[in-house]
Image (cartoon, rainbow, N blue to C red; front, side):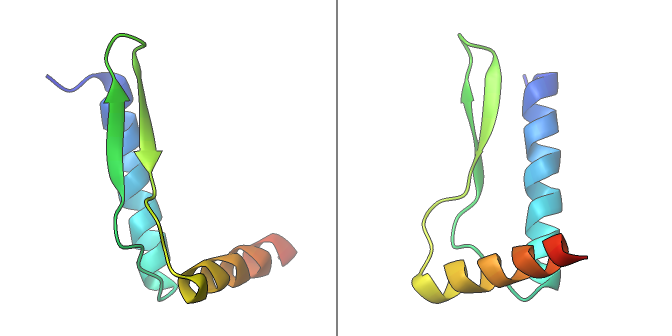
Length: 66
């Protein structure tokens, strides 16, 4: 049964994926990983190509400059 931490991480992953998609960026794999004994959930962003990493960096820099 999903815990509040899993729900929180899943919602965050979905929000991040939507924001990246609106910026024209798609990461090949984004999932939620949990550690039940420790009671936490993390968003795993996977690996990406250099062009995707550069596009991500550019979007972050533009947002930070606002």
